[in-house]
Length: 383
Image (cartoon, rainbow, N blue to C red; front, side, top):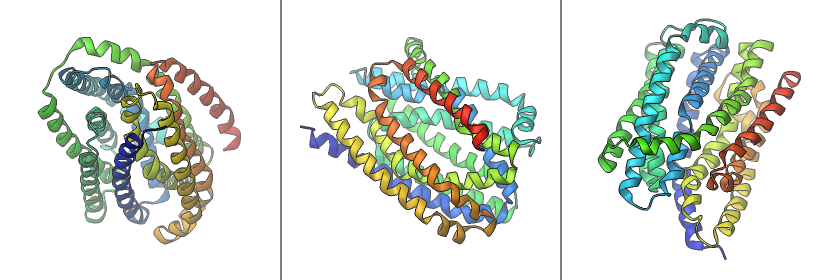
């Protein structure tokens, strides 16, 4: 019989994360009319391609250290050892991402030309790279909050970051008409505030220790995730690059808007679920009823995903008509398929548990390789 206490603890933290996600999504959607009224579809597409660059670089430089922090945290029973693991990974993440960002900055113009088709605004790439360095460092600190089940603090900080982002982006567009660069800088300010708060909190709780002996096993475990990330980023962003080259930058803007709706699946269900489940699944693994608990949680997640996905697909047309100009309406046709894909993606997070617990991350790489091959084979003819 699955433990009701453990399931209740999981859903309590999931609910807190869900409240934070709902507030964050509401704030993000409030910004959509501002973006669509002050950016052309081409500018919106350009902004999306900068997000693609950030996602690719972030995936390469993260090396899976934040996830490894959660996985290895519960291997230690002594709190001092756990704290040392967190701060060691925090320093390692900042160093790896900082060096990688500096190297990429040297190639900023050719990268922009290749992805966007032009050099882009002068300060766009430096802002994107500075943002991702702080974001990657923050992910390790957030893993610590999840491991300690500090869900309220996690959500309050997320809402505070959203407030900074909303104010900064509104001022950038309404007061300074700063366009794409203004939005990127507003995002940087929000991430910087969150990074400062998180880093100070973690150091105050864990101290600042760097133990080289803890780095090697983490990196060995994480290395397959680097390969997985490369493949996943390729398959996730190939569509935007092909749409830009085969159709137009305006089509990228429409696709990006449809993705925003599909992303609601992850924000409302997937994100709070994963944040609570990521540490929870390892914390209960040694219990005799662990399999029954996880199966029960999987069923509940599937039901919630089905309901939210259908709601998002049904109301997409009306919401776009209210919040954007008529030029964005074709995006609604893309929402149902993208919502289905997002739902399957959330459920796949649960099915990885056994592989991750056994530390067989190479198996995930082989699965991702097969998926990427299928995506690559189908993307060009379908688009």
